[in-house]
Image (cartoon, rainbow, N blue to C red; front, side, top):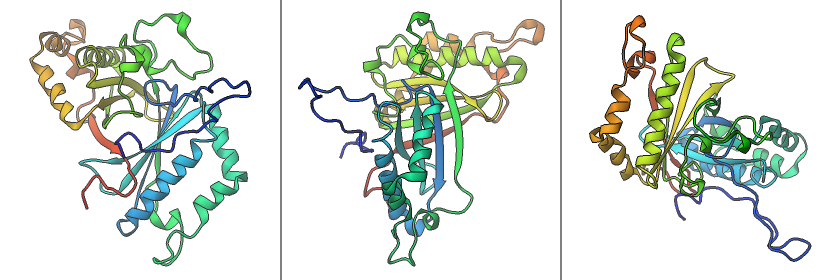
Amino acid sequence: MAMTDIIERPVLAETDETGVPAQAPTAFNTSNSGFVIHRSGQIRHEFRREGREFALELAGFLNKPLAGKATIVVFEELFGQQDRVHWVQHFKNPNDYHVILDLVDHDKTFKDITERDRLAEGGGGNWERMFTEGTFSERVIVPQHGVGDHDDDDDDPTYFADPASHQTTVPEGELLHTGNAGITIMRTAHCKYEFRDEARQFAYEWANHINNTLRGSVSAFLFEETFGRQDRIHWTLHFKTLNDYLKLVELGKDETYKQILGARRVALAKGGGSWEKTFVDGTIQDLVLSPLRSGTTASGF
């Protein structure tokens, strides 16, 4: 199984009622969604296999009724917390979350997935025993608005926010994202309140340069947190392979890249300074994710 074949994609009939080949519904990801819910939970080590299979089965089931509205992709941490899984839920609009709520209340298959005995040899139980108490958390992020230079005529009112693909001129077919990348890094940073605009402008320019310079190997999108921490921004960095991270490191030799990093972002009247002055010290953090695959673990044991 390829690294990107990590969820059961929605399936349609091969042809519609007229005999014309049916068009598959859009699979959503970080490049084309308007609202993203990032949910994570810690699996107990003794149930690491069962917990992973539950995470994949649940996402695979939900993606069918969500087809055309949302797509859920499952990840695990690489070089991070062992046995922590991440469901990244990509929506056009948060109103479509009602599909999941309806399934929770009324669907027999959902009830079977979440309640049947998955731990017959381990004392019985389902997900509630597989995961460590109190470790489930959610974060909502949306594509950063007010950046990029896309045509307003392209705006789709069915989206909560313009998708991140509007932040770059790279064609959508060439972008890497949560649906096709081998490695995804979630990088977060807390902007200083007084320099919130300057920090976002730097964040956009940095990501845009990566998209243009490392086209086909790395893609970067800018998001901001919603219903959470004020002025915390998120870059989603998508790499074709782990080796492509070295290409990002090598950008340090690029003159344009150096100019972006060295440009004055803070007015002299406020003390001057480059991007370093626009973020709260110690708040830039990376979370490295790899697609969760059935029967394997990123740790190797």
